[in-house]
Length: 254
Image 1 (spheres, rainbow, N blue to C red):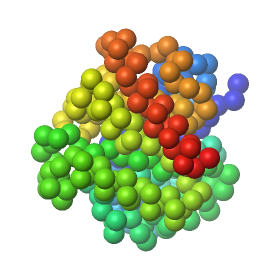
Image 2: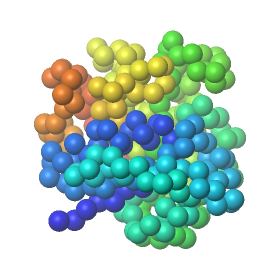
Image 3: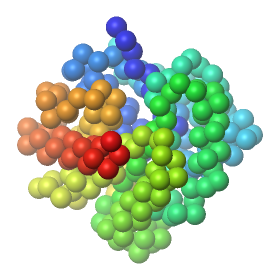
Protein backbone atom coordinates (compact mmCIF):
# COMPACT_ATOMS: atom_id res chain seq x y z
CA UNK A 1 0.00 0.00 0.00
CA UNK A 2 1.22 3.50 -0.87
CA UNK A 3 2.45 5.47 2.14
CA UNK A 4 2.21 9.27 2.11
CA UNK A 5 5.35 10.72 3.73
CA UNK A 6 5.14 14.18 5.24
CA UNK A 7 7.84 16.38 6.77
CA UNK A 8 6.91 19.45 8.84
CA UNK A 9 9.65 21.99 9.47
CA UNK A 10 7.93 23.51 12.43
CA UNK A 11 7.48 24.10 16.11
CA UNK A 12 4.74 23.57 18.70
CA UNK A 13 2.07 24.64 16.22
CA UNK A 14 2.96 21.79 13.86
CA UNK A 15 2.97 19.56 16.95
CA UNK A 16 -0.61 20.63 17.57
CA UNK A 17 -1.65 20.17 13.95
CA UNK A 18 -0.16 16.81 12.95
CA UNK A 19 1.05 14.70 15.86
CA UNK A 20 -2.18 13.71 17.61
CA UNK A 21 -5.18 13.52 15.30
CA UNK A 22 -3.89 13.31 11.73
CA UNK A 23 -2.82 9.67 11.85
CA UNK A 24 -6.14 8.42 13.31
CA UNK A 25 -8.11 10.43 10.74
CA UNK A 26 -6.11 8.90 7.88
CA UNK A 27 -6.23 5.45 9.45
CA UNK A 28 -10.04 5.62 9.60
CA UNK A 29 -10.05 6.24 5.84
CA UNK A 30 -7.60 3.43 5.10
CA UNK A 31 -4.83 5.88 4.14
CA UNK A 32 -1.27 5.09 5.19
CA UNK A 33 0.67 8.15 6.36
CA UNK A 34 4.07 8.70 7.90
CA UNK A 35 4.36 12.12 9.50
CA UNK A 36 7.73 13.58 10.45
CA UNK A 37 7.72 16.70 12.60
CA UNK A 38 10.97 18.62 13.09
CA UNK A 39 10.20 20.27 16.40
CA UNK A 40 11.93 23.24 17.97
CA UNK A 41 9.70 25.26 20.27
CA UNK A 42 8.79 28.76 19.07
CA UNK A 43 11.02 28.45 16.01
CA UNK A 44 10.68 31.31 13.52
CA UNK A 45 11.66 31.28 9.86
CA UNK A 46 14.77 33.26 10.74
CA UNK A 47 15.74 30.73 13.42
CA UNK A 48 15.16 27.81 11.03
CA UNK A 49 17.40 29.54 8.48
CA UNK A 50 20.12 30.19 11.05
CA UNK A 51 20.02 26.56 12.15
CA UNK A 52 20.31 25.61 8.48
CA UNK A 53 23.32 27.85 7.84
CA UNK A 54 25.16 26.54 10.91
CA UNK A 55 23.95 22.95 10.35
CA UNK A 56 22.89 22.84 14.00
CA UNK A 57 21.32 19.62 15.27
CA UNK A 58 18.61 21.53 17.11
CA UNK A 59 15.46 19.57 16.32
CA UNK A 60 13.57 16.70 17.85
CA UNK A 61 12.60 14.45 14.95
CA UNK A 62 9.18 13.07 15.86
CA UNK A 63 7.74 10.32 13.68
CA UNK A 64 4.04 9.41 13.63
CA UNK A 65 2.75 6.41 11.69
CA UNK A 66 -0.37 4.26 11.62
CA UNK A 67 1.37 1.59 13.65
CA UNK A 68 3.29 3.83 16.08
CA UNK A 69 1.68 7.12 16.98
CA UNK A 70 4.85 8.85 18.07
CA UNK A 71 8.56 8.06 18.02
CA UNK A 72 11.12 10.69 18.98
CA UNK A 73 14.50 10.26 17.32
CA UNK A 74 17.76 11.76 18.49
CA UNK A 75 18.28 15.47 17.93
CA UNK A 76 18.98 16.15 14.25
CA UNK A 77 19.73 19.01 11.88
CA UNK A 78 17.46 20.14 9.08
CA UNK A 79 19.89 18.88 6.47
CA UNK A 80 19.96 15.45 8.11
CA UNK A 81 16.18 15.26 8.00
CA UNK A 82 16.08 16.32 4.35
CA UNK A 83 18.54 13.54 3.50
CA UNK A 84 16.45 10.94 5.35
CA UNK A 85 14.60 9.42 2.41
CA UNK A 86 12.06 11.06 0.13
CA UNK A 87 8.98 12.99 1.21
CA UNK A 88 5.77 13.61 -0.68
CA UNK A 89 4.89 16.80 1.21
CA UNK A 90 7.12 19.22 3.12
CA UNK A 91 5.61 22.09 5.07
CA UNK A 92 7.06 25.34 6.30
CA UNK A 93 5.48 27.80 8.73
CA UNK A 94 6.19 30.95 10.66
CA UNK A 95 6.38 31.19 14.44
CA UNK A 96 2.97 32.22 15.72
CA UNK A 97 4.16 35.50 17.20
CA UNK A 98 5.68 36.59 13.86
CA UNK A 99 2.92 35.26 11.61
CA UNK A 100 1.31 38.65 11.14
CA UNK A 101 4.55 40.63 10.80
CA UNK A 102 5.31 41.12 7.09
CA UNK A 103 9.02 41.86 7.54
CA UNK A 104 9.67 38.62 9.41
CA UNK A 105 9.32 36.36 6.37
CA UNK A 106 12.14 37.25 4.00
CA UNK A 107 14.85 36.50 3.09
CA UNK A 108 14.47 33.48 5.38
CA UNK A 109 11.54 31.84 3.62
CA UNK A 110 13.18 31.99 0.19
CA UNK A 111 16.40 30.53 1.64
CA UNK A 112 14.52 27.63 3.20
CA UNK A 113 12.48 26.95 0.07
CA UNK A 114 15.59 26.88 -2.11
CA UNK A 115 17.35 24.46 0.25
CA UNK A 116 14.37 22.14 0.59
CA UNK A 117 13.96 22.00 -3.17
CA UNK A 118 17.64 21.20 -3.63
CA UNK A 119 17.37 18.18 -1.33
CA UNK A 120 13.79 17.15 -2.14
CA UNK A 121 12.99 18.21 -5.74
CA UNK A 122 9.99 15.89 -6.06
CA UNK A 123 8.21 16.94 -2.87
CA UNK A 124 5.19 19.24 -2.85
CA UNK A 125 6.13 22.24 -0.73
CA UNK A 126 3.39 23.56 1.54
CA UNK A 127 2.75 26.53 3.77
CA UNK A 128 1.00 25.83 7.07
CA UNK A 129 -0.94 28.90 8.09
CA UNK A 130 -0.98 29.43 11.85
CA UNK A 131 -3.90 30.79 13.87
CA UNK A 132 -4.59 33.92 15.86
CA UNK A 133 -4.49 33.77 19.64
CA UNK A 134 -7.55 33.57 21.86
CA UNK A 135 -9.12 36.87 22.78
CA UNK A 136 -7.85 36.60 26.38
CA UNK A 137 -4.38 35.22 25.55
CA UNK A 138 -1.48 36.28 27.76
CA UNK A 139 1.29 35.59 25.24
CA UNK A 140 4.09 38.19 25.57
CA UNK A 141 3.96 38.93 21.82
CA UNK A 142 0.19 39.51 21.72
CA UNK A 143 0.57 43.28 22.34
CA UNK A 144 2.16 43.50 18.87
CA UNK A 145 -1.40 43.10 17.67
CA UNK A 146 -2.86 45.29 20.43
CA UNK A 147 -3.97 42.05 22.13
CA UNK A 148 -6.77 41.90 19.57
CA UNK A 149 -7.65 38.58 17.93
CA UNK A 150 -9.24 40.11 14.84
CA UNK A 151 -6.26 42.39 14.25
CA UNK A 152 -3.90 39.44 14.60
CA UNK A 153 -5.97 37.29 12.28
CA UNK A 154 -6.24 40.05 9.65
CA UNK A 155 -2.45 40.45 9.79
CA UNK A 156 -1.90 36.71 9.37
CA UNK A 157 -4.25 36.62 6.39
CA UNK A 158 -2.47 39.55 4.75
CA UNK A 159 0.92 37.89 5.20
CA UNK A 160 -0.43 34.59 3.90
CA UNK A 161 -1.77 36.28 0.78
CA UNK A 162 1.53 38.07 0.14
CA UNK A 163 3.70 34.99 0.52
CA UNK A 164 1.47 32.76 -1.61
CA UNK A 165 1.62 35.35 -4.38
CA UNK A 166 5.40 35.55 -4.16
CA UNK A 167 5.80 31.78 -3.80
CA UNK A 168 2.92 30.57 -5.93
CA UNK A 169 4.09 26.96 -5.96
CA UNK A 170 3.51 26.62 -2.20
CA UNK A 171 0.36 24.71 -1.37
CA UNK A 172 -1.58 26.45 1.38
CA UNK A 173 -2.64 24.47 4.44
CA UNK A 174 -5.20 26.89 5.95
CA UNK A 175 -5.22 25.77 9.58
CA UNK A 176 -5.57 29.35 10.77
CA UNK A 177 -8.67 29.88 8.66
CA UNK A 178 -10.19 26.64 9.96
CA UNK A 179 -9.66 27.67 13.58
CA UNK A 180 -11.22 31.06 12.90
CA UNK A 181 -14.16 29.34 11.16
CA UNK A 182 -14.67 27.10 14.17
CA UNK A 183 -14.63 30.11 16.49
CA UNK A 184 -17.57 31.48 14.54
CA UNK A 185 -19.69 28.44 15.49
CA UNK A 186 -21.27 27.64 18.85
CA UNK A 187 -17.83 26.43 19.96
CA UNK A 188 -16.85 30.05 20.32
CA UNK A 189 -13.37 31.11 21.34
CA UNK A 190 -12.59 27.83 23.12
CA UNK A 191 -10.23 26.05 20.74
CA UNK A 192 -6.99 26.92 22.57
CA UNK A 193 -5.84 25.43 25.83
CA UNK A 194 -3.58 28.28 26.96
CA UNK A 195 -4.50 31.13 24.67
CA UNK A 196 -2.40 30.03 21.70
CA UNK A 197 -1.81 26.24 21.61
CA UNK A 198 -4.82 24.18 20.53
CA UNK A 199 -6.79 22.17 23.05
CA UNK A 200 -6.34 18.41 23.01
CA UNK A 201 -9.93 17.50 22.16
CA UNK A 202 -11.37 19.55 19.28
CA UNK A 203 -8.70 22.23 18.72
CA UNK A 204 -6.02 19.87 17.46
CA UNK A 205 -8.71 17.88 15.66
CA UNK A 206 -9.73 20.94 13.61
CA UNK A 207 -6.19 21.57 12.34
CA UNK A 208 -5.67 17.87 11.58
CA UNK A 209 -8.87 17.83 9.52
CA UNK A 210 -7.36 20.48 7.23
CA UNK A 211 -4.24 18.40 6.78
CA UNK A 212 -6.35 15.30 6.12
CA UNK A 213 -8.22 16.96 3.25
CA UNK A 214 -5.05 18.34 1.69
CA UNK A 215 -3.20 15.01 1.87
CA UNK A 216 -6.00 12.70 0.78
CA UNK A 217 -8.21 14.89 -1.40
CA UNK A 218 -11.20 13.56 0.55
CA UNK A 219 -14.00 15.44 2.26
CA UNK A 220 -13.37 15.16 5.99
CA UNK A 221 -17.10 15.51 6.71
CA UNK A 222 -17.44 11.86 5.68
CA UNK A 223 -14.71 10.67 8.02
CA UNK A 224 -16.24 8.93 11.06
CA UNK A 225 -13.23 9.21 13.34
CA UNK A 226 -13.44 11.61 16.26
CA UNK A 227 -11.38 12.15 19.37
CA UNK A 228 -12.87 9.87 22.06
CA UNK A 229 -13.67 12.89 24.24
CA UNK A 230 -15.45 14.84 21.50
CA UNK A 231 -19.19 15.12 21.22
CA UNK A 232 -20.92 14.47 17.92
CA UNK A 233 -21.77 18.17 17.65
CA UNK A 234 -18.12 19.16 18.17
CA UNK A 235 -17.08 16.79 15.41
CA UNK A 236 -19.63 18.30 13.03
CA UNK A 237 -18.63 21.89 13.80
CA UNK A 238 -14.91 21.26 13.45
CA UNK A 239 -15.12 19.14 10.31
CA UNK A 240 -17.29 21.77 8.62
CA UNK A 241 -14.89 24.52 9.68
CA UNK A 242 -11.92 22.66 8.22
CA UNK A 243 -13.68 21.73 5.00
CA UNK A 244 -14.86 25.30 4.47
CA UNK A 245 -11.28 26.57 4.88
CA UNK A 246 -9.84 24.07 2.40
CA UNK A 247 -12.66 24.56 -0.12
CA UNK A 248 -12.31 28.35 0.00
CA UNK A 249 -8.57 28.02 -0.58
CA UNK A 250 -9.20 25.72 -3.55
CA UNK A 251 -11.55 28.25 -5.13
CA UNK A 252 -8.92 30.97 -4.81
CA UNK A 253 -6.07 28.77 -6.07
CA UNK A 254 -7.47 25.91 -8.19
